[in-house]
Length: 345
Image (cartoon, rainbow, N blue to C red; front, side, top):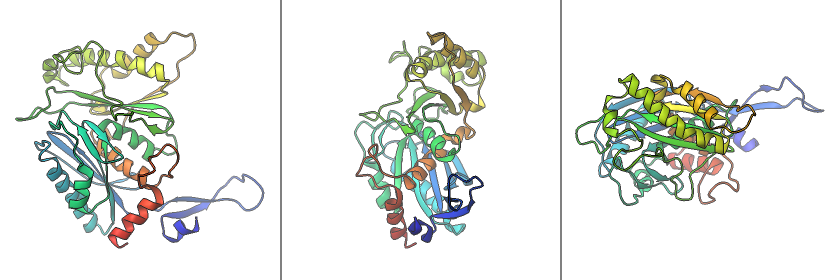
């Protein structure tokens, strides 16, 4: 403990007002807010969003834009965005501790491999993290975009974070010339069980497809060609939300999730979403017991993924390895030591 105090990783925050036992009152500790900054990036095939935050989640800088990205140009785009984040950190006199990147597709977050991505046209595994680390000199974590939304809740809501919750990422993606995305709405799920993001044995946990959907219709029974009118067509939006929540209700009740967080573009286009979710859960429930759960709309809105990517890095930086982690993964104090040694801090 004295070691991390001496290194300035944590600072004292006064004594507890309440006495938990005999002897002197305990001294509270908190993460040093001046430790450094973290960059969180979301990269899609047609747009990007980036934030630079403190380790407590305060956004110091953000930027976004529209740009076509394919599997061939993905690394170049990521390097450019990391460079912009690093420029801000340097101009502010702050150390950039590392970078989290949220991507659409199947991601192995432990080895930093993008396994598949329909959006980018990636059909073979790409060791993206190693390439980016070599080209940027930064420590980088990769994650599926919907899973990133879970990390935002875990990293930056310490006081009231839920143990079992589902993050529902919805993005009304712009259809730009050359885009590989076949529809204007993309949905992904992030699943958190006992405060752990669930990846699955093949890293495909959370991949969403509505019951009744086909290869011809897309992610929903409603044909994807109709989604070009979203989110402006309110009647279609309400119909889409009904189908979405009917599918989610089975998962929520089966796993006993106690919170559902709608993220991405959903908070700005709520329409009947909360009402439909509550009704669907009630219709799917078979007992006479009250079903207790919370429905929230992420405060981060369309920055949900980029904030979660930053949160991913923060969680890794301040975590303690245990039986649930991959032992080959560098986390916690060991990660901090590697970062500071590499940057000469």
